[in-house]
Image (cartoon, rainbow, N blue to C red; front, top):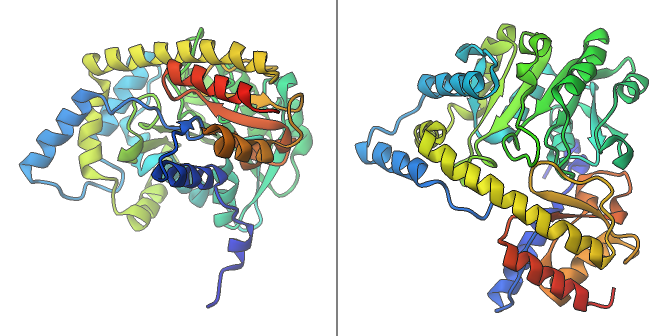
Length: 389
């Protein structure tokens, strides 16, 4: 059978391979502490479930418009206004099949064959593979603790070349949990704008920040109206709706019609029950639930971080958002992938090796998710301590 040559460049999502092994061990009766997958352990908030149940019970479960349910687009616009003081026209908001769908649409609309996108390395692995899927090329920007694992304007400017199409950044980031302040995003945008390029800002962990207020690039007066900026968001992380597969894209007004055509062909429309459920995500009673969970994530971070350091792991830049710690394991082990396999096989602890997140020192790092309750996090630390590292 003929296989597309692009498939040769698409690597497996190693964390999912690790999850598969964890499930195999659990089927054998092993107890596995999951610290590998970026999925909150909390259930979907009850108001969201109730809204979905009421809608499904009506039986009127049909397609929506390709851009999504108008009422949900309006609710997201109100969210930006009420939470961040950002005025965004609902017409610029496209409801998508998860944040991945939003990234697909932005890249499909903007990428020509051979275009290069600059991405921080380490970074979310699917980004570079989505770029390749649309015949582009991902160019990694090595980042480390010195810049809080975020690219700098000078670095972006120096890496830019005649084939560069744009820059993708994330705040809070995966795998490092670090943030970009709005003014820092504006400074990065100043470079891409001067270079006639694009900027994609991934804000899917927005709301999950600790000791600092949540923010959006769209609250900046220049970025709010920029015609070369895409903002990606999701109902998965802060809103706790991973399996509902729902996200959104804020696009420049002038390209929305083109994105609508792509969305119609790619997806027909987002999930109708998920969209009606998400209308309840912005209710005050839901917000109370979500904020309590955010505080608990902060407590988990504060529990796990010193415990990992006591094990000999190095965390040079403390995460301020998301629910990950990107730990340097070089003082306790030679190779993170080997260590990850030892942890799951010998200690029943699943963590993700840096190999998933790029090419910059991946074998020195593990991503450890604090998406399980604190007692289990401490038990995981005890299990690791018993290993002969």
